[in-house]
Length: 70
Image (cartoon, rainbow, N blue to C red; front, side, top):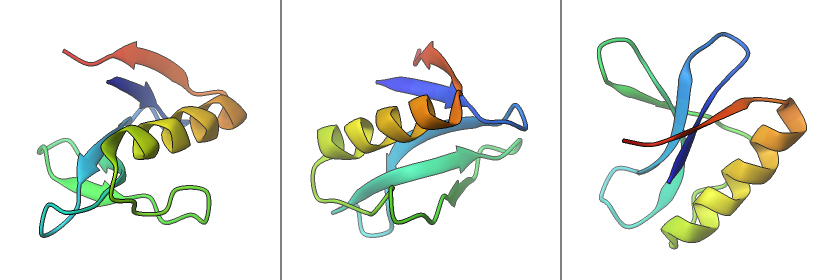
């Protein structure tokens, strides 16, 4: 799965939401906690692959740099 660096240099990745039954795009904070990006282009969805496709499109529009997740 790809991660991205946003305009502030913060990593952004797809992760499971609370309950683990839906996925969305989240900023990874310095301590490792996650903050959801709330945008109509990045809804919470049941399929992790769909959440990644949404993030890929959004990141491309924003011009964010892609990184392969470790």
